[in-house]
Image (cartoon, rainbow, N blue to C red; front, side, top):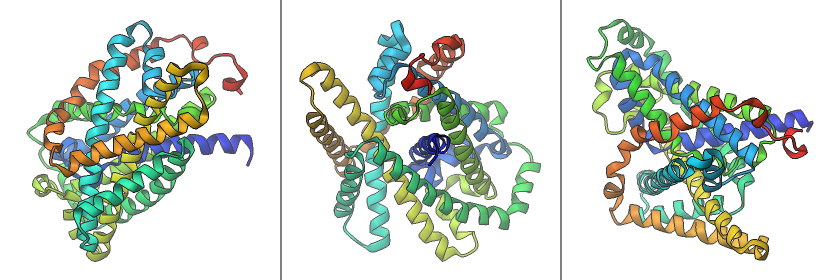
Length: 383
């Protein structure tokens, strides 16, 4: 493998981490698509691109900050990226990331357990334990394993999404034209754009998951490629899924699991149903892995900083395993003991809060920073 091919592969692996983290339970079930896009009617044709553009710029500057400062956990990144304002913005970012971590991973257990029960008739609690073991195993062997797992799952998810949504879009394309030509949603264009921006806000709370695996990026070009590849993959799949769901507007608005409704109205209903179950299962596992790994890495770095010269690789690995185990156990407990509604009560407001606390500060910092400071002149980073 040539150096150029290797750096492109590294950038693509980051793009896949972004995609598999983005593609969580809400996305895979179709519920987020309806809430944030489809319920606004024909405006859903372009609003996904607004959300992804915002996300791409935020992740570009976040990844570039990781490369510049060699900071690959969310706490260190926040301190160095925000500088003297880290007490406000870095702290807010840490709190919001951990709220997302708890909720998204708890949803992974709840949703994954239900899907396995539906597929095989196995006990719900046993299913959640299986999900917990899978997430734990994929988080304790380092960033490279997380990136490779994300790549494999991304390929499977993209294939499944295309199979379900593309066939649905082809079959129901006349319905899509009808939705576009009919009167717009009473919610209005302004509401549709605002909802797309809050969707971006909700997603960028997961910056911590992305900077934790960004150590593979070495140059500004690597960062640009990762952001570009990520934008393309996420935008294409998000638009395809949104357009596919839009063909069933407005009937789909009240569906609890819209993707099941879509599968039932697609070619090959039986096969589509199996693909949907597999997609949801992959989605919740992939999101749980990224979230738990990002949280565990923060704890490892904090302990190493405290120990200083006494820190060892063996100790760091043990800490990472124990941290991952604690995160998995806590989120498993939240899902199992019915605490998810309580934890998720303020979940919907995070998208709005992230606009002033994450999106605006990151974009202002990123666009205002002079280029000589963007990449330090060290061999490890520039070559």
